Length: 283
Image 1: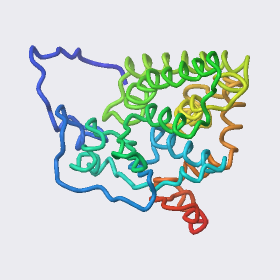
Image 2: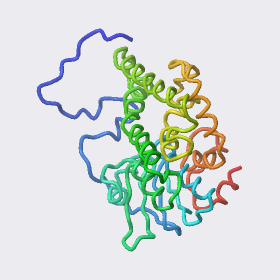
Image 3: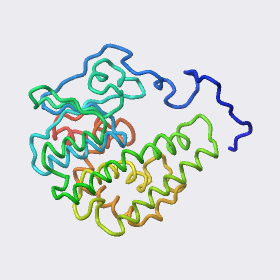
Image 4: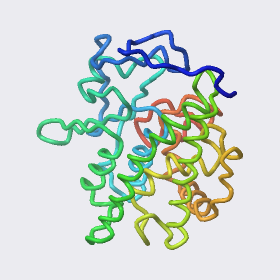
């Protein structure tokens, strides 16, 4: 659909809670909690509060990768946060993340429990805590962090930009869809050119940079994000396709993407995760 009339911004913007769209009922221009509710706490030091969106699966993939490596201290409880129902605005969740976005992590192994919010910060925190999936030499570590922060800065164009206007906006508008489709394709080209020269984003080693970027751009490459694969011709990015398929085949990744998932095939859903045995009960 092409715009038939020009929108003229008002002199002073006001909140229209009836503006429509899939997330209209939970979007608001103020922060803080809407209701009092404590967060549950399980038996492990690491308590994750999340949902299996791309930002959420970054963290569960890393935790499962750490366990795969033999870091038993990375055992965790993963609690479901239903963002469409406003769970992220509970007083307990806001105390962990004042920005009311998933994922959020509490580490009870420290003398004073440590809160960690923003998915990139959680990845970096856990990688440093366990000394894994972050290169130790200066050049490779810096390159991994380059790509980790590239993802944090780029994904809003894919999610809040392209994804919103292509998949969730109450009406389809040509200009924003074209604008953000162009940017997402440029980003995919950035990745494809990089992965043509190296197996992983930071070089020879699989790292938290790959986990972060794969959660968004790997899902797009595999055609499972917004069902936009054909629209964006994702098969053209052959090096991204190779990288995305290799990561998708990792056992820890297969487990991680199931955690806090409550849609799709029932066999792939694991609303909460409290031990490795939980995966067996859902087979």
